[in-house]
Image (cartoon, rainbow, N blue to C red; front, side, top):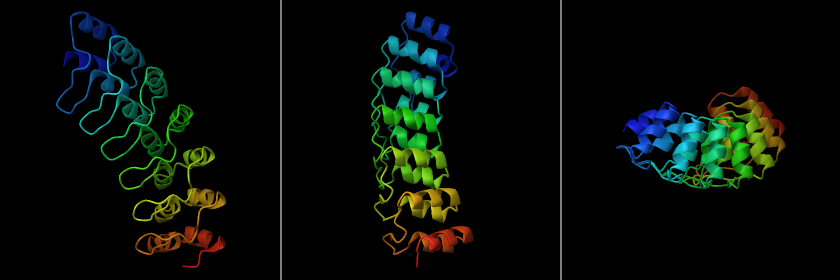
Length: 223
């Protein structure tokens, strides 16, 4: 709709005009997106604020179960995240795969958004349908500062997915030495095994990460 296009591009005056002329603020496109989602994804705080004032549903979900909050978190738009939470956005809403806004922000390395979401009550140990946590996603994507922050805020270092994988395994497998070191310092179980019997050491070896193999061995990893 015209309203969606105006919101997507942050044209506040046009958004205002269209609403005055009777545009439906909660209309959805074929993918289930609303004007508010488009404004949030693109970081247009003023347009988003106006849509909310005019009755836009802050917790509406698109066809994948994503909310405006998740979309703002994906792109690290902290001010929009703040605005949405102030107006009742559910910080622990989940998409179809069980992802929360916190997981999304953690995966993408948006530290300030991660911090804000936790302050506002986001569950730091929430799991998706596979048992993945925000800590695992940050470890997998080499966001060391986010990993540190999540642990400080109570993330379980030794949480496992439903196939038994830990944050340490993800970091070891992907060659993220700094993250591996940090996780070990914070009490990661070096001998944990996944359902196939693999340890972090095995995964690091399989992927040729020599420095990580040395590091894991220095923490007592045997196989």
